[in-house]
Amino acid sequence: MTSLNFALGRHEVILREPFVTALRSVDRYPVITYTISEGEHLRGIGECVATPAIVGDSIEGIEKDLKEIITPALSDTNEFEEGLEVLRSVTAASSSIAAADIALHSFFANKSGLSLGQFLGSKADVIKSDVTIPIAEPEELERILHDRMNQGFTTFKIKLKAEDLKSNLATMSQISSFVGAGITLRVDPNQAWDFDYSKSFLEGLASAEIEIEYLEQPIGKNQIEELAALTALNLAPIMADESLFTLKDLDQLIEVKACSWVNVKLLKSGGIAPAKAIAERALENGIQVSIGSMMEGAGGVMAAALLAASLAPDVVHDLDAPWWHRDSQLNYLAGELAL
Image (cartoon, rainbow, N blue to C red):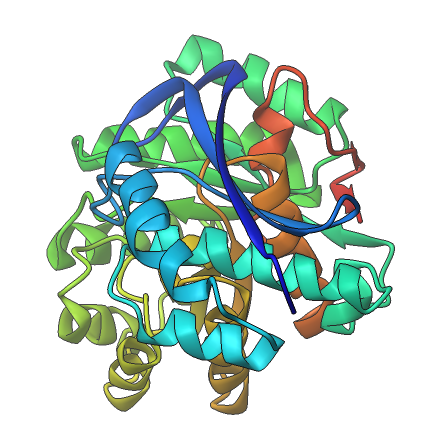
């Protein structure tokens, strides 16, 4: 390979409505693009966003990583595996590395005459996704639920925050009563609770006969022993999200039997290659895998969706971020993302 060119870009995504979780509220955000090209027609584009509350990065830090660390390291790359090895060796934010990893995969897929999906081994035309139900007032909640049901989604990820138990259980009761038996419910407090609250919440759901598919990362990312204790209660499946960035993290979760689900995200793990390694090891150990994303750009989510289709094509994943875009470049129909 000769004359590799690298370029950084940035554009803003505006959301159709505010995305509100226990960690933040956002109605727009910048997306960083990273392009690797050779000649006029051969190129690969990667993307990432900054998520300070999760990854601990920043827009400025990501751009500095890509300009000053990653681009010089990749400049003499001749082969795909060589490029992956370079990315494994650099010290940079996982989101920065992910943008370069996606660009690298896309570039070599293009160089091989393949789509990114074909390069990853995916044969699917669509992948199923949940849709997020943000934190909202009770009078607004039913409008949101009605909208999501009209859009054809059948799996809802419900965001909850740290408020009194009675209020959160009332929210769950309102949602369950409104949507009926045809909708699968997932709950994500984004680390807002502690063990005792989480236990009481699950017991409250059981008493109210409200079934959920899983409770996602209810407690702090470093509290994996408490996460394991929640799993041992067998009140509901527990998912690890913020506790899982690396293979080492996964091994620790497996060792203590902390969860039965994991949410694997490219921006946490550092791109497609490490995310695939994490997902495959989880599956080998009997842990169910959902491929997810941050609130990010269409290109980054499509890369995640193609990985999801190659690994677990029948799972309902967590890939609704571009559905929130006011001018979405991706197509969602009846809870499925077109690939």
